[in-house]
Length: 257
Image (cartoon, rainbow, N blue to C red; front, side, top):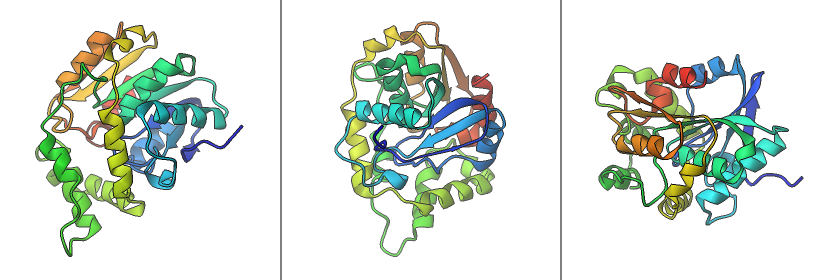
């Protein structure tokens, strides 16, 4: 078997659980305490999507389908035939595509803060995304730059009331920043993703989780996915923004039950 294009990590014992992170976030960028809690029950597998982490030199350009096949290859390399899959944001798009392309490999699907393929997706205000794609200001440290960017993805007041959560997240991001070419390559992949009606073919048990105060991906997208996927459960979390593992970790753990 050839080596996957995407780097991956695994820890814990139990049923396999694949975590797929969102735009510009590597497999490092998950809350440590949350990962440790998951690892008590699951063998937690995290991958660095192409362009991020230790997959920064993976072939590009790429599509969401390519990233889904990377996830398949990681599961195979980990010796896993079937896994629960939790995808956040862009990771939720990859998780949908993985389920469509390789349904036998997915036992449960949890889609957090994500959207369906075009043309069903409801696009949010692009100002926040455009701001996040700007370069740091002259003399601005990466810590300050990423703190401002990621704080903007949370619900109002969360970053101020949970400084320790944001500090850990920023440390993880700064440890292995995603280069700008990787950032843009992922944006292009998301922009070309289409085929919403394919979701009607999903037969995997699916839970859709979305924060009502998500500033990056309009919460109506969660409702659209839940309407398209037969039998999907929708959980809307009041007062929560885009970073569900950080803002509502217990809700995601419960969704995996």
